[in-house]
Length: 182
Image (cartoon, rainbow, N blue to C red; front, side, top):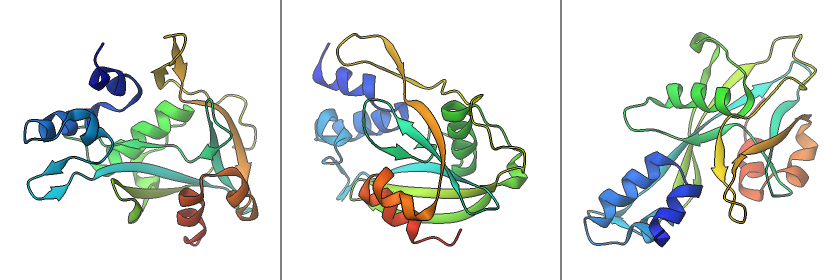
C-alpha cells in the first residue's frame, strides 16, 4: 500500500479526490492531503461541515474522538456533489445516529479553522427528551493503524458546558465554539 493509499484509509473520500486532482497538477497526493498541494495558484482548502446540537440549558453535544483525549462536534468533509447542509446531516447521522429534519438546521456560516480547512457549521436545538446519550452510536469508521480493523471515529458522547470546552476540545475547535452565541 502506498503512502497516498494509507493516508486515504484514515482520511475522507472528498479530500482524497481533491488531493488526487491536485496531484495531477504537480503536487503529490500526500502533500495535498496535508494541505500542502496547490490548485492552480492557491492552496486546496477542504470544507468540514458540522452541527452544534444544543440543549436549552446551554449545553452542547460532544463526541469523544477515538484514540485521543479530545472531544469534538459531529463533523466531516463535504463529499463531491453534496451541499453543506447535506454533509452536516450525514455526518451527524454517521457519527451519532441522530437524525433531524433539514428544516431544524440553522446555518451559522463558514468559519476559518486551519490553513487547509474551513468549517461550515449548523445548529440544531435538541429535543427536550434527549438527555440520555446511551443510544448514540458512531457508524463511521477508519482503519486502525495497528490492527487494520475498522474502528469507530467516535467512541463516546456527552453534554458539555461552555466552560468545559477549552479542556475537552482541541484548542482551535474550542476557540470557534466559544466565539459563537449558543
